[in-house]
Image (cartoon, rainbow, N blue to C red):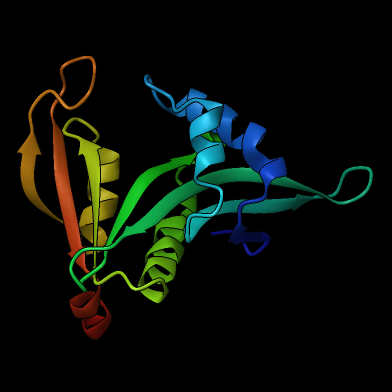
Length: 163
């Protein structure tokens, strides 16, 4: 990933840019209110690049939303959403966001992290496989168009000891 790209926690002022990336990335985008409701999630992060226009501005390249749910002393992290602006894909932005989110969820107490992915999304599935996620089950007709989702899980303790 380019050295001028950094990952930081989201700000409320970022939400319109996040929403634009969401709408460009998904056929069933989250509404603005959904992003607003998770502003305090432990792993709602954005990847930004500083642009050299009039004054220094940050350009949002992508985001990830991750949260932690209590589960009988073994908290579960959940990557709820991850997207990269179409013109910034293939530069490692999604991988960096995912890794930073997993780190943040670990610090927030998650022992394992789960996510759902479209069965047909080979690019995302490859990224998740590379980062240690393993399929645990298929969720029939998870998406409104009838497509199945795969539930993927990574054990953060074993992942950390491997790498």
